[in-house]
Length: 493
Image (cartoon, rainbow, N blue to C red; front, top):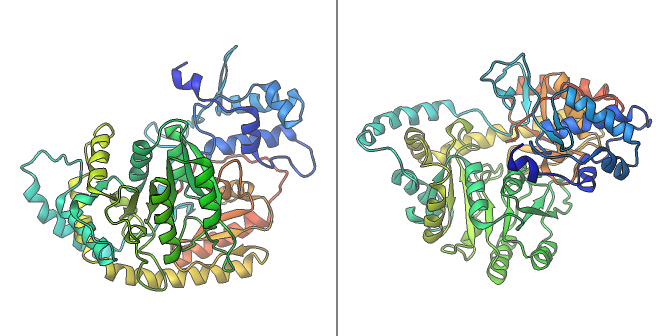
């Protein structure tokens, strides 16, 4: 048993909150229902691997069930390979082995299977003509770099300049020395969280929020401080900045992670006055803002809003802005960036050396070329996404009249109120029909958002229609008391 196994554990009360409403309505098959919910939490990433679960007697007391029920559930989870135990020491979560998979197959990558309808990733296919043209030009650019060693902690100067120019075009003067290129936005989030927080520190986040940001906070050993999004007439949600300010005052977080541009998953857009208040809050309290702008270029009504840092924090290390090529161009490029003060960029680059030694040169050259065409590409995306959003809204009205979806003005997905707390069960049922979903609780803490589901409008229309037909079949056959079996771990983007 290694050190992480001993130290990573979850208490019975915290575990109960994470389980949420797991009991079947008829009160029967409790052990099976508990087994299915724990399995889903592990496979869906909400209960980290190598976590020691509570002892049977302790969990039974908190859940107000018999110890026999918990023991039967744990036995079933061990048989399924979701738990491993050591006599006298406890039980730990793990991924089940799947003999049907090849040795090199990843249990987290069902998305390469084209027979599946992927509604867990809010991501677009590549703009093929523009990408091919940029790739061909980048291959020619590549020759100039072959004589060097190929390592660059900061990123290629040509790409840093292209990113800086784009910020300037959006109203935020930026120099290349204020840009750090990373291996995607997730790498940028993890790097910033590692640099600015430590184990036990508080990190303020919107609630709901991006699941992989929650994972980065948990991996660091920091504690998430969720601030609820308020209601909005279009269903997207809005920021209660008074509540957020109070949370900063009361919790004294070391970092605040926010998504002001088509917030993932709600689709909300923060106005200019709200952005000014965020910068003022950061200055007054000394709380760094990690601002996620990965969806900023995907507005459906026009050009992107001015960045948060443009509201009086152009040179401040208190505002770190994250961007990415993944959403507007293509996820396969795996190029992201952080824009902040030059001094903070140097600090992040020094820390990065312990994680990786820079990004791939060719992909950076491709993105540098694409940045010159970003306006043209986003205009094309805008028309396609508007039509896709409206088509999905229409189909949902027809097939799921009780559901209440948001109507965002940008981004890649809808945030849907299902009218009952069955998101996790629907996710498992949909998987049996070859539809991959991201359950609402993936976007929250302590089992929140079982009434919600994020639905991207990024599939090709014919595939979206088929996916919705299959989802409707899963919904009609949904049995809240049925065991949830055959779930697979699903990454979320």
